[in-house]
Amino acid sequence: YFRNKHCYVNCWINRTSHSVLKKILSKLNIFFHGKESEAELLRRLSTKLSDKPYIVFLDEFDKLENFDILYRLNSANVSLVLASTNRSALLRFSGRLLSRLAVKEILFRRYLPSQIYDILADRARLSLKQGSYNMRILKLISYSCKGDARIAITTLRKLALNAEINGKDRIDISAFKFVKSYNHFRVLDSAQKRTSLSPDNLT
Figure 1: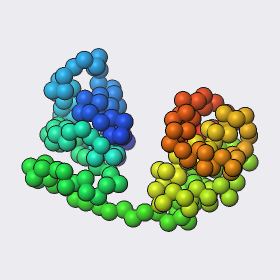
Figure 2 (figure 1 turned 90 degrees about the horizontal axis):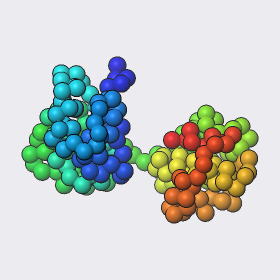
Figure 3 (figure 1 turned 30 degrees about the horizontal axis):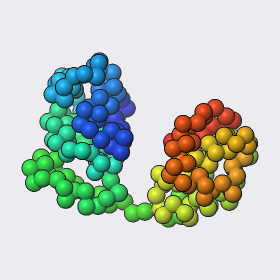
């Protein structure tokens, strides 16, 4: 039912209201040249949606520079799903915004290592070449990510990219600590991602 009726926005990357709106408009195939005002982008969004239901998922919403965009999106007939690892994020909402959004909080517990392992095993099976990884590396990641599936998946992806960059056809467990480095993540992100390992599918 919700196919083509939703948009995912990573607020760690898209922190400004303008950036969020451009992301949504792009998903809806609404033309803009990038120099429009925020008000104009909102007008085009409202016109497009009219009385049609639409869902916007704002991941890491607490990274937004200004929460006013939430009020404006709600006024444009957008239903919002807000996600954050910071439970105190809602405390930054004004009473007006809380009332308007009718916020309902749902707390998701951290995954157990066994659950992380199952998630990684599925991702690896679907995305990586058979024989390019082993169960030991998946278990190592599962117990080191502190229950955060995104960290686990990102770590596996970076390990696959690291193997690619070094011309290896298997993920090297000895590179685990090196690849977990944030700075090295950024280096790997800029690398070419064409290999039988297919790490680009691990997202």
